[in-house]
Each structure stands twice: as C-alpha cells, then as structure tokens.
Image: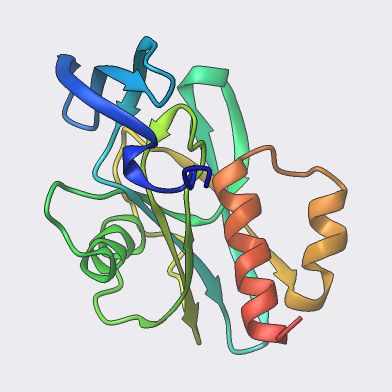
Length: 187
C-alpha cells in the first residue's frame, strides 16, 4: 500500500535552521529526507499568521480603505488587518488591528474562515472575520507608517463584479472579500 502523501512522515525533517529573523517573520531552511531516500533542502518564510477583517456597515456595504504599499510603490483598496504577534490568538489580533487602524475598541466580529496564502513558500495561516454594523471614523489618524488615503463602500451584492473589475490586486483582500461574501450570502 502506498504512503499517504498528506501524512507528516512523507518527508522527514532532519534539521531546521533560522537564518534571518525580523519582527514579522523568520526565514527558515530545513533539511529533509524524502520517502525515496533522497535528501533535500526547503527554504521558506514563517510568520505567526495574519488576520483580515471585512467591515460591513448597517446598509450592507463592504468598507475598504486605500493603503500605500511600499513594495509595489502603489495604493490599493484593501480590507483591514495585519500580522499577528507570536502567541497571539487570532480574534485578539483582529481586535488589536481594528483598534490600531480605526480606533474602534469593541467591534461585532464573526469568524468566517482561515486559509494558507502561499503554502509552498510561506508557513502562515490567515484568519478572516466580518465586522457587522461597522462604523468607521474616516478622520481617524492611524499609524503614519501605514498611510490610508481614502475609503470606499461597495454594496455586498456587487462584491463579485467589483472583484472581477480588478480594482484591487491585493490577494489577502480578494480572498477576504470572497470569504465574507460567501459567508454573508450563504453562496
């Protein structure tokens, strides 16, 4: 009988070395032996995880903010969220991120799902929430290192068409919006 490729012993880790650490992630190199006896090396990024929150206002609109991303030197429409701290529970991270980005301290959150964003390159799980009855003070000054230039409201029923128009290129936001749309419409 063939080995189940989904079981951990499919590849056996023989060593692991963290070769660079930042406040947000570790760069890791693992040595392993495959099931056929061949040795290999796998290099990847490991993070504590990330959370995303899709705000839905009382009129059933999704609220997005336009945020600057240095890596691509561009502005993009995004959901709210960010990285988790090591050992932090995902709901606590969602509440912390919302307080940092909106000033809100007691949002009505519902967990909608989790996923692995790039499971061949990054050891990370992203957790997604909807924030029902969201009210955002657009004058709130958040972190100056994460500038926000504008806010956009998209009716929930128009989210699939809006996404298809490619008005955002952020994969985290695309996934979060699809999860939220499916959860809220039971699609």
